[in-house]
Length: 125
Image 1 (cartoon, rainbow, N blue to C red):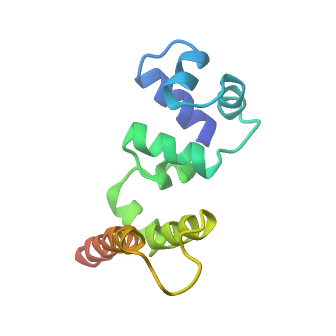
Image 2 (cartoon, rainbow, N blue to C red; image 1 turned 90 degrees about the horizontal axis):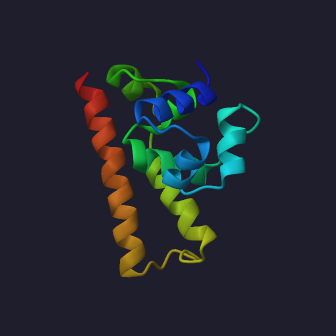
């Protein structure tokens, strides 16, 4: 099953009848949603992030179709959240050197905690 199939299945699970309604629910343009559901376009990280928040399903589900927790634990990239947080903080100009503001530290600590939790869960299995 491909991303487009998971997206269509999710829309059907939510009992949303039209692509327009689903695009509104996600917060993206109808044309973009249509291209995603038809398989003409791959999701950007921004679209994935919106689906993650909306569906409460991991990124690995949306990208690879992984549903089982054990498979997820073994497939999830280690330090994924820390890497993403650092990249985003650099992109928006909040990290320019090794001197971090308290708010940057808070974001990095939250991301690191999520990654440590993943590693601990992985070790338990």
